[in-house]
Image (tube, rainbow, N blue to C red; front, side, top):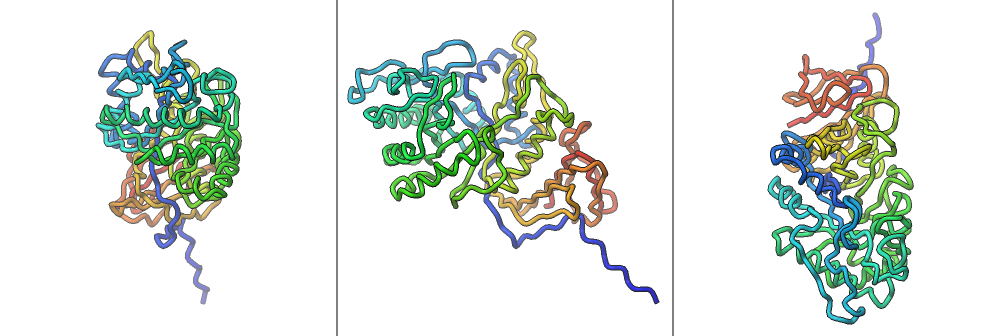
Length: 428
C-alpha cells in the first residue's frame, strides 16, 4: 500500500491575523512648476492626464498630492518657484508682506482638480526659506536658516497653508525642509537633526490643524538621525506626526525606528532617456518601480509612497512625458506599476500577512476598510507560477510588457503569474 503524498503548499498564503502598517495613500509631486506644462495642453488632454493620476477606475486613483512651497522669484520655466514673500520685509521682526497670486506656480488648479476626484491629503513641502532668511543670502545652494529668522519662517509656512485654506484646499501635512542633508544647486536648505528638532518646537504650536512632517532626508537610512533627534526631545516629539525619507541616498528596505507613520515621499530612478518599457534591465522601467513599491511596503513598512514626478518633459523619469510643441503626452509603464498598487489599496487599508511558496514571488496583501483584500504578486523569475485555489469571486489584473492593469480571467479557480509580471488580485 503506497504512502499518501503530502499536499503541496499553497502558492500564496494569506493571514488576516497578522497586521502590519495602516496605509495613508500613494501620490505624486507637482513641484517645480511642472503643472505649467499641463496648462499648455488642450482641455480634453488635461482631463485625460488628471484621470490617469486620480481616477480610481481609469487611472491610478492617487490620494496624496505633494506641493512645493515657493522660495524664489519666478525665473526659468520649471525651475524656480514663486514665493509668497519674495522681498525682505525689513527684518525678522518687521510686519510680513505676503503676496498671493491665486495660482501658486499652477499648483492650485491641480489641487482643486484632485480634490474633485476625492483626494484629501495635501502635503506641502518647502525646499528653502527665502534667501534673505538664510546665511548664504540665496534660496539655492544650501545655506542655513538664520536663528533670528526662525519664527518669521514658521509664520511664512503657516501663512502658505492659510492661503490654500481660503481657496478651499486644506493642507493636511507640512514639511519645513526638503533633503536638509544635501546641498543642491536648486532651492535647498540645510538642517542638522538637532536644528530640525529645535525648529519643530517653534513651528508646531503655530501650525494648528496641520500634521508636521520631518524631514525629507535624501536617503531612507539618513532619516534615522532626524527621528532620533526628534525622539530625544519630548517637546519636538509632540509635534511631528509623520516621518519621511527619500530613496536616493539609500534604499527603502527596512523599517524606520518609530511608531509614527513613515512615508517614502520622493524618488524616481536614474536614467538619461525617456523609457516606456516594462522590463529592459535599465533600472528605469516599470518592473523596477513595481519592485521598489513592493519593497517599501513590505520591507520598510511605509504607510505612504509618493513618486517624483507626475509629469515632466524631455528625457524624464516621470510617470508621464508632455510634449509642449505637439500638445500630446506619453505614458510610461512606471505609471501602471504604481497604479497597480494605488488603485486598489485605499487609504485606511492594513497590510496583512502574506507569503509565496517560492522565492521568486514577491507577495504582499492588504485589507481595505470595506473588507476587500488586495494581493500583489510580482513574479521575479523566468517561469510562470500558478495559484490553484483562489477564492472566488475575485478580480485579477495583469501589468507587464503587454498589459496595463488588464483584466484577466480566473480559470477553474487558478491564476497564473507570468514571468516578470505584476498581478493584482482583488478578493471581495
